[in-house]
Image (cartoon, rainbow, N blue to C red; front, side, top):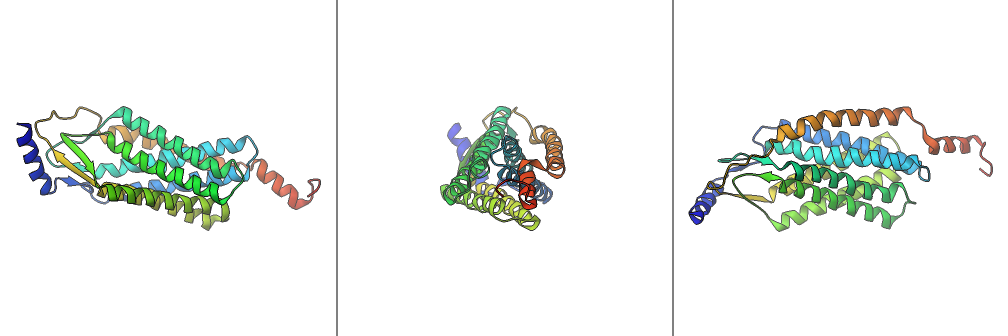
Length: 271
């Protein structure tokens, strides 16, 4: 009986049961905008942390950047984009605990990567290390999030496209960090945000292109959480977090800026 179900599943799969854009373009647009905003605020926090390196506040700015990038630009972008993912003949649901774990992993790995360029003296090897850690973290979060998918069947991946998705994430994250630390100015920051958003979105849809599914109708229907029930409250909370970080960026000067201004004014001994 199971073998018959698998044969039937393969036949259904061959007719294209899996859709990535079943709800039209709006999840794609919203996901990309969310990734850009989270990346822009997160990389701005990272730049502030780098400027205030050596002060306790730098750790807070790094943590804020990790939340904005890992929690909003990466994790939230992934699950908004997943609104468009559907499989004909079965409902798609998500494991709550794996979804939460993927958010924790995403924020934690990005924090480790950012800290290499924000809390320590900048160097080429540290930049490469930071980009590799963050890029692999982005990819790991994606596939951990995909492990949370529940439906009547099995899911698999094309290994070459999986490898390509990881390469995209690592290269683009490294370039974004370089923009953040080395290049100054508003346009550079916007460019870094765009690059990071491209990294996240490109990795996501490359990873999704690697997916193949087998529907097995004999399996019980999933009873886990719907994507909307998971993401909508997080979307609202993320909006408050981003607004708070943006307010902090615009209203605080910080010890690094104070010292830099004092050096320019000649009031620091030995300047």
